[in-house]
Length: 269
Image (cartoon, rainbow, N blue to C red; front, side, top):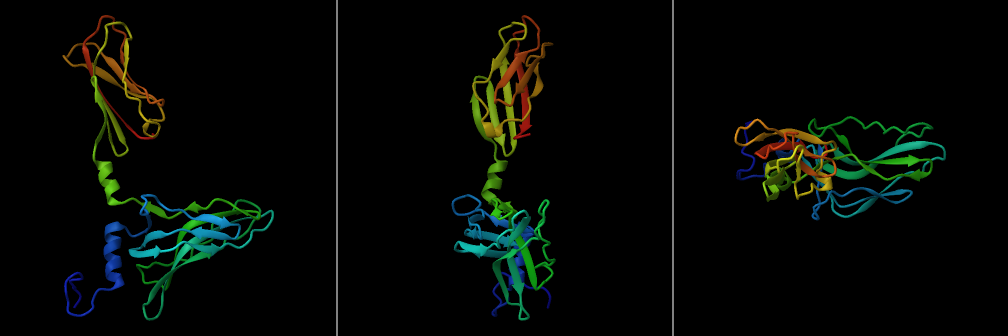
């Protein structure tokens, strides 16, 4: 019988790690991922001293298998050699024995020292999906220059919780007054303006709201503004890297019609 109701009562034990791994890989992804901690942050490997990397409490999903580092532990890093550079990889080492018993532990793949730019050691091939006996999942790189280890670099992908995904799809209003409306939806920012100039040539109006540093475009972006009653005068709606949002009359003296414009940009682009 090849069809099984995995989460149904069967009367005998019938749910395997392969069943749960296949489901979790299908929902989360086939790769390896770091989950955020209880504090809402993604933990990182640090150096405790020159010969020990400190691995914090970690929650990992590796090819569908859920693994935890429940208490902080250390991994030994061999001393470097003066005048040579080396990269070591702190990994999660998965093993499956002949009785299909699966285990996981923190282990280090040592790189090869050289006088030039250090390269990561080769990660042995293997896949949990393919029932390999050993699988190495890199978590962090330890760059070693001479005898001095540098700051570890996290390599495993971060997987935000579903609540963050929901927040990223839900528009939030950052400002809505005086004819200006500024909204954010994930990495997309938008400005909806409906303003009236005083009538002077190249008159401009600044939005009272300043875009925060982390939401600003890297370069000034702008779009034409139209007259809401169908008139012939135009304007320009822009946002610049300083966070200033501005509407400008396009040089037509006496044009005090109501102007409307809609501008969007990607955060940090």
